[in-house]
Length: 336
Image 1 (cartoon, rainbow, N blue to C red):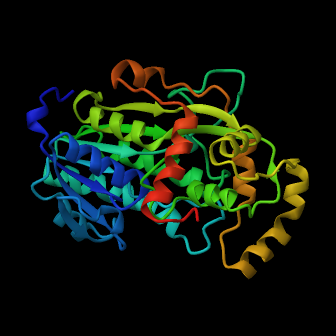
Image 2 (image 1 turned 120 degrees about the vertical axis):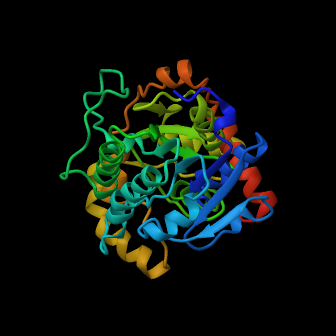
């Protein structure tokens, strides 16, 4: 373990313009680190932040060399989330080849540490009656493309940095939400649709939700305290969709859906929902991958290891939801 904070001063962050990435940048700057932010395109989430910006693509190693040159460590956040398949193959390539490229360039340039942001989606949820921790098996090619790509990308990074002087720490968050959600994220989009009363019904099931600020804080702690070759789950609170909607209603005082449809009925409706979404030019809320995620949400995801080694703490879900809506209203007016 690298125990000397002074040896890690200049940190690169890929996917810096994403939800987690921009909050990590803010956290690093707040703690006195020098930051190089890597963005593929839009960087409005980084406006006003005093740091170096590098535009590029994780699929291009020359771009990554420009980013990582003179850096001490890299936090690799860049990834594509998809709950609606991967028709062009870009999700798979970004989450696998992109991750391996970052590891290869970090190794070649002699960076001291790489923090790879994976996901709890990378590993299997069953059995449900046992604790969900870092020892779970990886998902396979038979899984949804996002899940499989995160599993394979994580394995590629481990293989690339095996026997390397570049230390590796893997972080697996659960479903991230909270403020500074500029684009917004997939869950942010759903929360805004819910706020605006455009969701007539919800599905059964639920998932584990965690605040973006708590995840970012522990990722920065992992620069110093994360042990080489170790995986850490950063999870929060399991909540059914019905309970989640009730919290939203309590916080926003908006009318929310009360009809909960079973999975079998929603799966039958998916083709119609896809047609409706295409007509309205919006991403479908309910897809096969989304429904499987909610049905397979493990009710006992454990972050015990991160609590012990990374001082990880998770704030109440109600606070995260309230802060998301408050930030949206104050920064962009999206709740009007």
